[in-house]
Image 1 (spheres, one colour):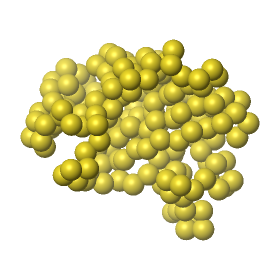
Image 2 (cartoon, rainbow, N blue to C red):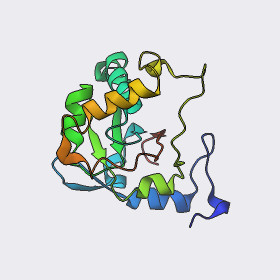
Image 3 (cartoon, helix red, strand yellow):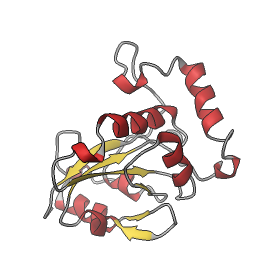
Image 4 (tube, rainbow, N blue to C red):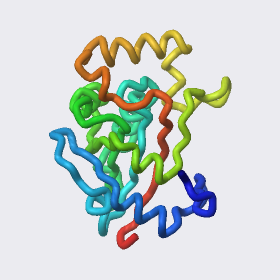
Length: 179
């Protein structure tokens, strides 16, 4: 249960209690190695991107466009980007191959980061006319669903139970060195 006194939003920093939970959360790399999130971001300036799930067509487009429009060589010195999905580690390599992401990708199957940061869980997409740039060429609901099925179970059926909850939303967070 979330403590309403520690509620966070897009423009509010996590409380010390929430940040402790975030730092103690476990993530996994594409080989299945467990890493404590706080160790991953310690003493670094990092943009952390939380995707919906590994078969989400919108997230695939976002990740692909991110790597194309903001290559690692264009980041300010000492800054890095990582991507975290809410499924298990097994789909990471397929996701990285599909999106051509130059950034490391991790999994948080326990959803501990998503829960601590209070990311919502809903299936609603962007409203008509409010689509993000990366969504513009994805087509309508049927087209997006077909693409997700084709790129997900169509190519990697063995990952059916490990991609993460379909309704879990993501977000972005910037971590500064020393925080």
